[in-house]
Amino acid sequence: MARKPLEQVTLADLATKDDLKDLVTKDYLDEQLLATKQELRQELGSAVNLIMGELGKMSARQEEMAGTLARLVARSEGVVR
Image 1 (cartoon, rainbow, N blue to C red):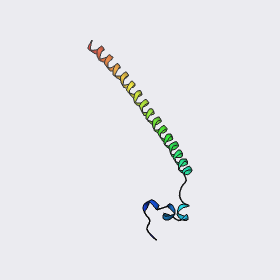
Image 2: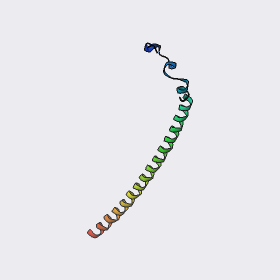
Image 3: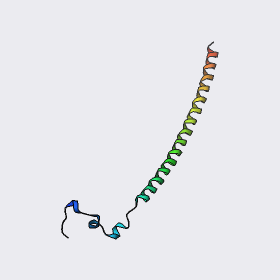
Image 4: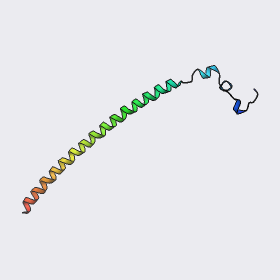
């Protein structure tokens, strides 16, 4: 095979029909990208829900601890007086 300048090399020089039949199409890539985006959105939504649940639990614990602390302060003030 004679050498060609790079500017003259075509796809036919590099691949056979059999090589090309396994290439993906733009539509296929678009479909895969859309499916991946949807999957990521679902995963992100689940992660956000999990984090919000944990924050809710922490807030409830904090309120419970504040109430306990308020009762202890009230008792200690009653003892001191």
